[in-house]
Length: 102
Image (tube, rainbow, N blue to C red):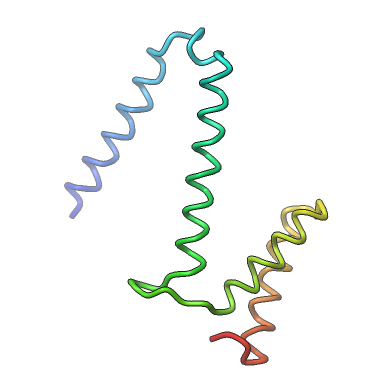
């Protein structure tokens, strides 16, 4: 297993170093900036969806959904990040306490 971890680490390092070879004018292009921003949002949304609605190979709805909803509301109200995390955790704990979600 450690061989795969080292191989993946070396691949990440090589990719990062290859990024320094990209010409600056290409990185400053508006289309490139918009594409990178869109990809970031898409990847983050996918990760949030997977971690919120799945357990193993099953799709589930549990206290994590309550935490996500509360966190989104707090973010929309421009709450500080630490407060968003605390409110999300409190919402998940409350949902589990009340038996609303497993």
